[in-house]
Image 1 (cartoon, rainbow, N blue to C red):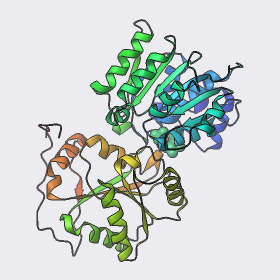
Image 2 (image 1 turned 180 degrees about the vertical axis):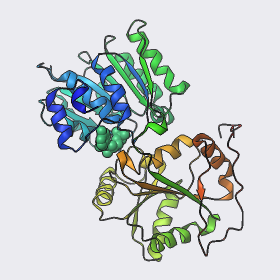
Image 3 (image 1 turned 30 degrees about the horizontal axis):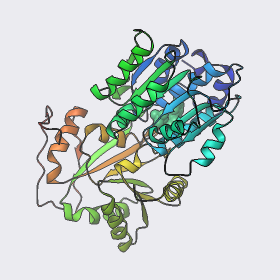
Image 4 (image 1 turned 135 degrees about the horizontal axis):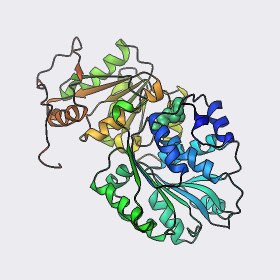
Length: 398
Ligand code: AMP
């Protein structure tokens, strides 16, 4: 089914054709008609499935009619967990709306709020925001929600994980009851369900339509996942070896702790490999510069803590490395979703040490298959990691 059959207006179809999208992804096929019909939607879909376009395209189409907006008013609010994702979503809105007369911008913390306030004075059709900064701006009366028509919660599970649930509730309380609600999340657990309850309250009992895009339906099936069992103290030597031996053109390397990120960059430098790190302690300007260098190919190896890497859209990423295996299976799926995006092929490599055994069981149980193991010559392990049990249920939540 082509995009032109989904009911989107012509200037949007033209913009996506110019971007080279030929067919809608499964989440787009399902979500776009529901959103265009004005219904609330709860969608289980992870990054890499084309979920951003799934809500932005119909939103733009619905807004493509003449309407004058009063000052400091917004028509759509898209909440995201991180500034990087806010910037990325706003960039997508700009691309998709290039033939429409609609305004959009992103607001997020860590930067001066004055320019953001200035731009809000005229009113903005589509505002992408992180919860904390949005509440700050609302408290300062830099924006008002009385003309809001649509609320989107993007990556709702991550917002809950990052402790934004109360902020989001406070924001929802300020919104007009008569609005359309859209929620996208990699998993819809109890923490996320609370928002769905708020939605039905706003619609006087009208229920949201729920859709779920299973991992097999995603556009990124071509990810070659493999793992290497390794002793903790040989991880950085193994990474340098792989970069050199396998002539990696690019890698996004996930690491648990920020001080370890800086240490790894130094260890790689000693072996003649130039890398840089992105983590919470670096300024926004620095993070943006490093990310731009990585995207342009100037920087080939980027080390990132999980939190700092959330929301990064790096386009055609060929390889991600779990230098440290994540605790949660959802995090693993999110990370590998950064490669092989929208049809491109990618590689996801995990370093697994003995201490990661339970996390590996949880991840492989969630995937419902074991991950292919490879042995690398010259890196025998002292502490062998057993093969997982695939029906593993974690006893505690850490
Ligand atoms: P997302 O899941 O929103 O992070 O999107 C993942 C990537 O897929 C982004 O880089 C989009 O630009 C791209 N994309 C989204 N929809 C399509 C489509 N229908 N065809 C090709 N690429 C797409």
